[in-house]
Length: 258
Image (cartoon, rainbow, N blue to C red; front, side):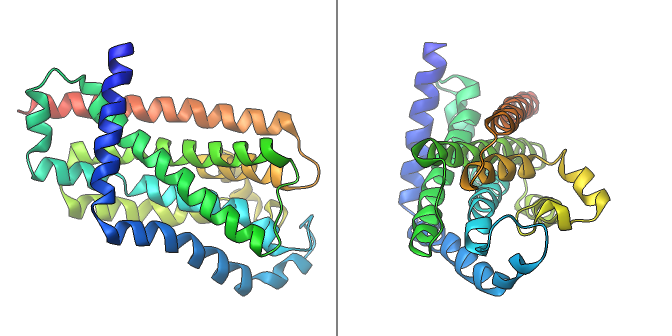
């Protein structure tokens, strides 16, 4: 176990260094949350006048949704890094080393979680400047950051697995585009659950993206239900473990083709 953690930590450092060598990705990570929060909060700011919202500030309502949405998109596209490693022969070279095979997947997943936390801090900082507050205080910040990390890591596991099974950028792009928007809109990121059609609310209860939104939004609102927070974080944690296992299974399938 210690060896697996050490190797995963090494792979995390390697993936973060690779990201830092690509300035365009750093700019995207820093500016995308800013665009989401500023544009959406202004475009839909009067929607809170509808019944169903428990706040008069759409920025307050939207902030946890944007945190989770940004983490979700980060995780969905994480498999592109694996495609890049496959195309450059990096994975084959690592297979010739004593590195734990699971670390090759977990390193990417952990990197995605770290990126999601950075993005969440940026979103929360901007939202604070716009007047949004986390009523649960420091613990609330930890919950929001944890929800973002789990959402990103869980979908990164799926993305890594699909990358290893398809091994083509075109296939990854097609899958990401086909699933990202439906999962986003089948959640309460942008709108109060009470205003969603009944069938959409039912689907949202099984949507991992919505689990993150519910957990994060509970600590932003004035009356936090810690039971609700705990249940949804536990669901996300279990989902993350399952998707990491899927990524590891896909890696084993890839190795059998070599």
